[in-house]
Length: 120
Image (cartoon, rainbow, N blue to C red; front, side, top):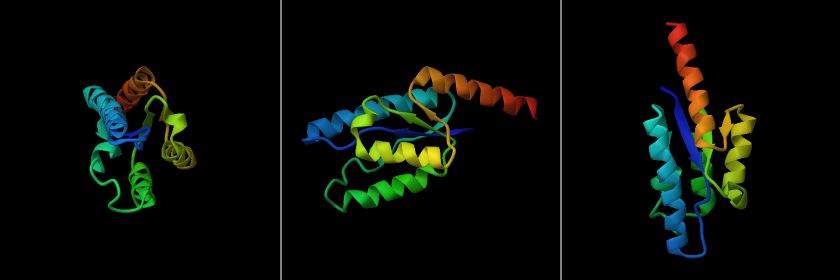
């Protein structure tokens, strides 16, 4: 089973904006599961941790998790997020495929599943 990391904005000007960012990421995460891949959604992992530690601690941890994934799916408006930009750079550095839409990810997952079935 492939593991997909969801990357997108987390921070916001207030707690409701943060919650909206988390929910957008979670919506995509559920769709990834429906496609037959496991999904890592770091937004849900640190949802209530704001202010407990410096943001860098969480980003460094997220990058360590990302390095172990098979693909990255970018949430809309990722370009506005410094953290998401860093996650994208790390994926590219690690040669992990980066997808900007669910249909593109779905197509890749299908190809990967077909290739895996052929090698069995």
